[in-house]
Amino acid sequence: MTGLEHAILGLQQALDAPRRHHVWRRLVRHRMAGVRDALARELPREGDAWLAARELSLSRDRDSLLRRIALLGPLVLETPDIETLRADLQRLLADVEHHRQRLNDLVYDSVSLELGGSE
Image (tube, rainbow, N blue to C red; front, side, top):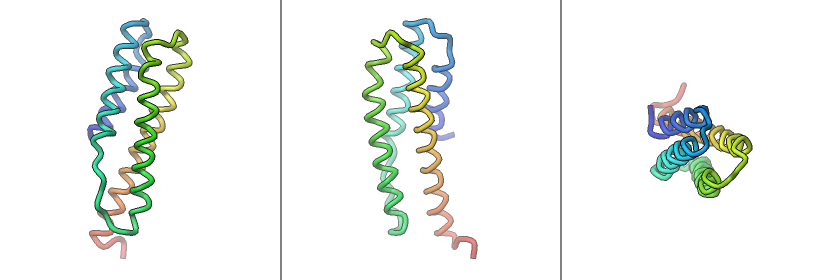
């Protein structure tokens, strides 16, 4: 399991935890930091030219996800409507999971190319 997969799972578990306001908020905030750190650790790949556009797109997606995490972070501690906040965090988590899958697809395609593909 990669660091990002582990962070995604941790945040999902935090979102599913019983929502005792202060405890839940601190747990979610902590797990969001794990997702943020895992995304920030993604290294740009120096892949083949045919993958450059996808790599750039993934980089932009990652930056967008990091901005959303930064915007939602303070809301976790301040917003009185926990259920709406939880729904926003679930959408963020789904988008992070999609990003992780696209990242895995890119890695698979680059390895497939290096090994000669299916020819």
